[in-house]
Image (cartoon, rainbow, N blue to C red; front, side, top):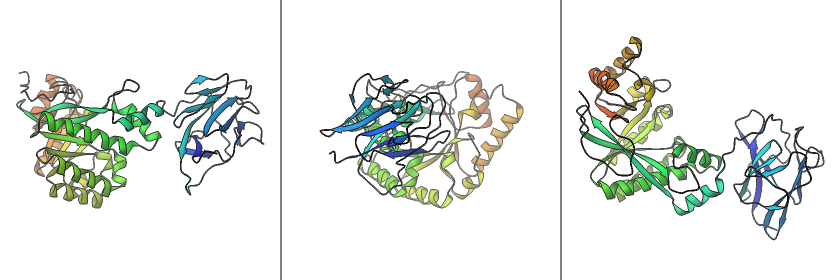
Length: 369
């Protein structure tokens, strides 16, 4: 018998919360019949639909002649197939991911009734490949230039990228897989470490803005240890820690993080300002060094209603009066830049000045007249 504990994890109905079903004995039958170990209340599922079994420490799935089939990673099986942790399994229209872990004391749902309509696809595929990515550290970074109002190079934002052929390179789909496996903090830390290694190699005295995953704020001790380690290993790099506006909801915690960052000579930026509720109270209680205006405020500002320009002008003057530097993200046209420049925005980032690149470009980008 395998020493591992195995679970099926999936969304129940319209809920956004994942639930786990413990595979507490083998064989473990799945179907509509009430005597199955996992009872699924779906007309798409056969009475005795499929069976999971263990043989020589190998978990297996076999279909029991179901009408609508059993699938592993969206491929229908017609004979007994071996399973690996992270596989996505469909019993007709019911979707689960296979989880392997040590037993713990969390509440487990050994018998679950599920009511879902059409075939779901809530669990991202690629978990097996993602685990290999983590094991090999197969990530890299891209760097997008940040310039001042005259187009002179000021800094770069460091952006994580995947570096394996089996998965997307973009960070969003990678984080979707990571979140389904509760590995988003690990991925964020790996992106950061690899990016700073590249930054140190290419531009050891540069200024770099770096992001965190919001989940990292749940363990501030770990987060600050990570930043302290960064400062120890890359003492010459000038760094700015970016925090999403939506995370700025606990002033005491953010103040503590800001104070510790200052002690390590690391700046603080509030990212995506204006994407949701503009948290002006938190800005006054824990002012950062930089505020980055979200692309939603910046896009088409040259043709936007006057009220939008007035709002941005209000934010701009408010921040400058507090001594907070402003940075506009997502600037794509000369017309957008001109309006922002006239409003007094100090720093700029976007395709108008340069796309993210694996090579750190420190050349000047004089805006078009």
